[in-house]
Amino acid sequence: MGRAPCCDKANVKKGPWSPEEDNKLKSYIEQHGIGGNWIALPQKIGLKRCGKSCRLRWLNYLRPNIKHGGFSEEEDNIICSLYISIGSRWSIIAAQLPGRTDNDIKNYWNTRLKKKLLGKQRKEQQAARRGSSLKQEMMKRSGGGSSMVPNSSNNQNPQWPGMPPTLLAPIPYSNQDPRFNDHASIRKLLIKLGGRFSEADLPIHHGTSTDNHFANYNTTSTGQQIYQAVNIPTSSADAFNITGSATQFAQAQSYVDEAAELNVLQGKISSFPAELDPEIVYNNPQGLYGLEFLCGEGIVDNRIGTTGTSGTESNFWGEMSPLVYPPVASNYGGMQQGTLQECDFGELRYHRAN
DNA sequence: AAACACCCCAACCGCTATGCC
DNA sequence: AGGCATAGCGGTTGGGGTGTT
Image 1 (tube, rainbow, N blue to C red):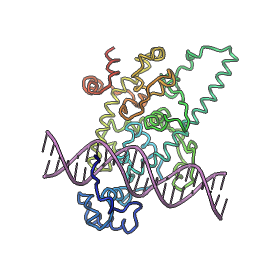
Image 2: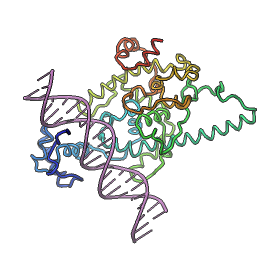
Image 3: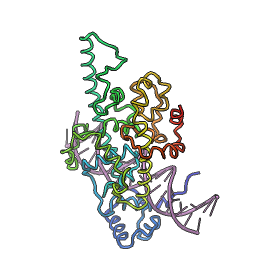
Image 4: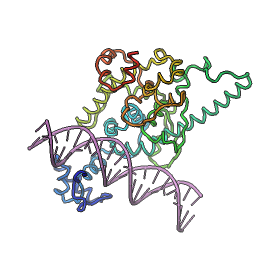
């Protein structure tokens, strides 16, 4: 048995809005407000539209101070940063971008930013391939060596000191690869890239005027930017420039609180190289199983090659890379006593207990 | 110039959250 | 406390626009 429809579908107009309909809706709301009931609104003003449709039209298009297109570099970074930290909560992301609607950001992400990101990934992969073949060539000339043991001089990742280079090895990419069709994978990829991408990485360019803002894209921006953007809210609610409703603020704040808690948790994990000996990780896949969510599946994929790929939002927080969340010591005690026990991090509890 | 392919975005759909009775 | 109505959200779709062959 399905849910009762919100309106009489037969007597409701669908499709694009006409200027007349827009005018009716806009002038009514400007004079009388919404009146707390979107469902009743279309009848009041003689519109043959569903209340939901009116609401969407107002929020996404007619509302004052709405911006369309022309996303700035700063907005790109904010979107990417928040996507890393909270995923596809478009309404919350929109609350951080004055004049932007969740629908707009969602569309922008799906049509532009995601592709930009994948373009970057492809480039890195090509670069890595080139580097890898060069390395093989040098190995041949020098008499070779064990591929199983990383060279000590190579054992640091320049971008993330202390992190074995293997952990950030490029993930094989193809357009058809289903791994890149889900949000979790994209987010991991974004984290891996440190949020860096430039216009040059954009595989497709439409040449519209709205693309101009990419012209000055700072290609030297680093994961630090992402780190800052993501972490600012955890230290101060003021940093969240809430332009939405009080509800949105409360909701956003709750995510911020969650993120702050995760900071603590991830802070513990982020000392991975010291506390989780890479040797153990590499040589003991069973021990790692269940922990991949703390390090990103790509890590396990690359090194061990066996991991479950649920790819669902259910383990959303767990999928966040510790790279994004540096240690925050102050709340660690509380985290140990409180949140951790309530979280369903079975494997984590297991490893903590052992 | 026409046909086709691809992209973008407005709008829809279905689900969950919330508030009220 | 439970049920219902509405609001709000995120995923998806379809049509128009633009680029390519």
